[in-house]
Length: 472
Image (cartoon, rainbow, N blue to C red):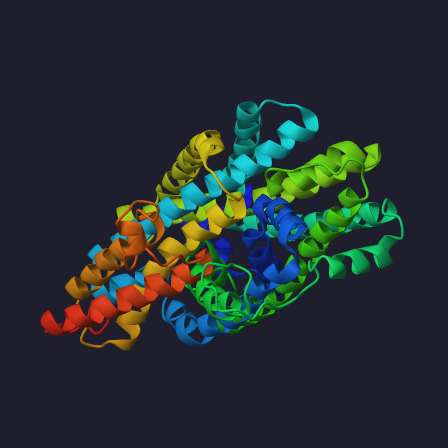
């Protein structure tokens, strides 16, 4: 595949010739990292399968992307999502959105790399830092050589591998439970872990119907609508219809996949409940890894490790390629045509972003809480802001670039208050908005709404007197 890279356009978009089914599997594999493979079973172990309400909302969010944003991405020969912002608001807004994307990807995928290395440490005994470096270098290597075409085709293979690994793990667990599947259903139901829906209005809880249908939908609208890692896949498709079909079907596949990982976690809960004494896991992220080490047949451990690495590398390689593309096209080259030497530039930044993610992963040991919640909170935090700017440009005709920048900056301030505010410091903890404790699925909704509201108000004060860049 590396030999097919004739220029930077081939490296970044695979020649815009990739088939629908490959794009579909690549979308699913890209949003399925080690975080999904390990943290989701850990969540179900402790809380049950009601988390499936979140990916249920993802299906709705994808439909919004197809209706609202997809037509914009195929109105011309684009390389990144943020070229839409350049056409509407100019370079300043485009560059700020691009920086937010790059920072988000580096932080979130550094956490994903950390969790993958943690598995290698637990199962094989390789020290964490060495594990991080080894996985990081392997991912950088094939991304550097093959570009987007290699990323997508490798994603498709990795999807099949990690799904097979999850099914194998479930089969082995059921074989070691007294009573098998019937016991899982009985104990899971009695413990409440097989409750599919929670309809309460507690905004601090992740696994409620409203967090899924509202928060999950807007989160998916933002992550799959304005995140370059996803948009780059649509732009690699043969047509808008092909990209839309792949995106719509991926929502159904992702939901089914999450259900598989959640059921796996409930099965682990039942299995360990039959052990004497029942182990106490401080972090859910370690539960599946511990089972693999202690209870998987020796001949199957390698396949499970391969499944974990497949889930990790599909996301990490996509992140490296899209971050390098965004930096070169949006921050360095702008909207200029592809030139000789740009391929080398994109490859160099692919390596540099790989190094950056390795450093984030090494220091991620100090990050508290569930890894899946930390990763998705970061995604909702920033992609929600960028979604707000996209919607402002699309639906508020009088919005100027200054209004968009004001909306983006003030929206960022709101999210800092929501996520980083002194919730435990008096007297702030008892005052609005610090007293409101929001679960991360609502972050994208709050972020995009804040940008829209502040941008709309700013456009009343600083209207766009000239034609938009698009109209020029």
